[in-house]
Image 1 (cartoon, rainbow, N blue to C red):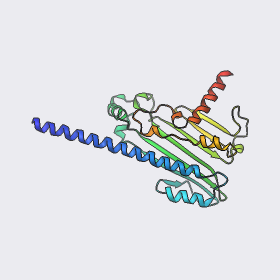
Image 2: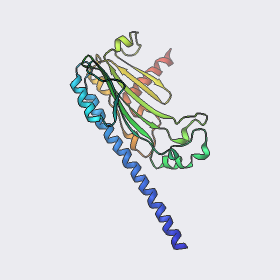
Image 3: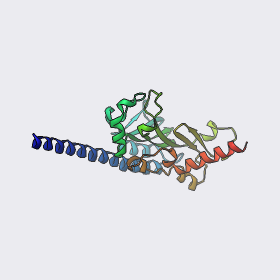
Image 4: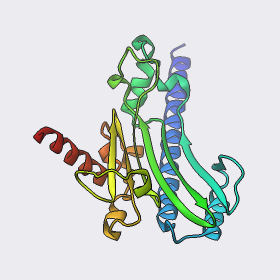
Length: 240
C-alpha cells in the first residue's frame, strides 16, 4: 500500500509538472507570435501601405484572422486574435471564492489567460487604420467578488488616418494623440501626422506580462508611453 501510494503521488506530481510546462510553453509561444504580429503591424504605414500589403498580412496570419464582412480593396476590416485561455476550472469563478483555490495556485505558478490582438482597415486600396492590443487576466485574489465576469487588464493603440475627423475638438495635452483610460486598461489613438518617434513609442508594446511569474496589475506595463499619457491626464485633472 505504501509503495502504491508513493507511485500515485509521483504520477500526480509528474502530471502537474507536465501541465505546468505545457501551459508555460503555450504562453511563450503566444508571446513569440505576439511579438511577430506587432512587428508586422508596425510595418504597415497608414495612408501609404496599400491593398497588396494588407493581403500579405492576411495571408500570413489567416489562421488566426477574419474579416468582419466582405473584404475587398475598396473596403475591408480585418482582425487577428492570438489567444491562450486556461481551462475554466483554472480560471476561477467570479463571486465564489470557495471554488478559487485551484486558480490561486495556478496563478502563483505564473499561468494565466492572455491574448494579443491586431487589426487594420483598407479603404479604396489604402490602409487607413491599424491597431494592436494585449490583455491578461488579473490574479484571482484581485477580483471584485460582486462581479459576474472574469476581469483582465488590457491596452490597445491605434493609428487612424481620420483622426482629425473623428476628434475635431481641441485636446489639452496633444494635438495628434490621445488616451482613453478605463478601469484596468487604456486605449490610445493617434494620427499619422504625429512625429515618427512618437508613433514608434505609441506602438512600443511590452510582452513580459504574458510570461512572467509575478502577475501584472497595471495596463501601463503593456504600453509605457500610454501610461505616461494617462499620468499627464491625471495631473492635468488634479491641477484644475
